[in-house]
Image 1: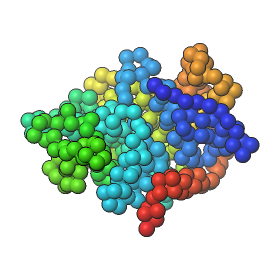
Image 2: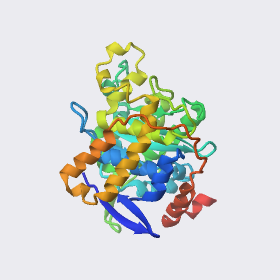
Image 3: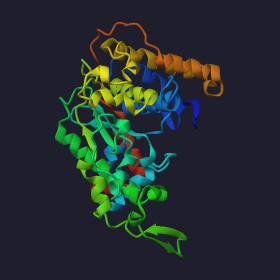
Length: 372
């Protein structure tokens, strides 16, 4: 695990820097304590925090590998046009340590501009799509448990239950994401050993650039791509069962952080109760689900917990170098705090930093073509 955490000052305001995400302390605390909508920086910060500190710390839980995309990822992806656009975006996300399709889950924050609503797409065990690419692999999928399935699963986690985001919009997003991941597959030789010999693309050696190139890169509609991108080859859950829903119009950011938080603790088995139509007594892992933590008050109180986490990191700059402080910080983040007063009316602040960060990313990547 590689965690970089420092404190600094920007324009006179104390900032907390975690794995390249810089969060203004005063602004973040104001959003958290005033029932404001959470902006993209807070989402990125706490989802990264949960991934780095909470994977595998519970007893008998999965110590899986997870990738969390930036909250800006899909905004930029939706603006991609030709093949080169996707390659440039791939270069931007290439810094992840594990090849994307070898993760146990890929977590993608989604934002609806029309309603300022956050929701989540989780792609579970994407490497299993290679089972269907190999002709000798069985294509039946009768299991109701994700970990036993021979396919990858795609779960849409919407704390409003699809009231703002319809199935057609979710399907459109999934199609675009699969296109991006397929281009990642085509351009990363880390996946070649997952394919049968007859399906491995031919590589040629470039004496000028001194590296190998995939000759199938331009064939975006080849047989393997058709298999990868076909929605029928994935198990897709647009509206999961037993998913906790928000009961106000401002806590969507809290919910998607906690959906991811639970995934990082327990692994993809947490989704079995959300896809299984059988009785809960048939699901072996239900003891992992603390229903008290899924109450409305628990989600509301996470704002207080997040504030405590930021204050602790601010007051203990060496927390990441001290195991005692580090464990204490995890205890704070995982604590279930008693209900506090949340009767005040929510602030209707817009998610202001999203536009400025989007412009910065596009400028830094020289993506003037996005504004065509």
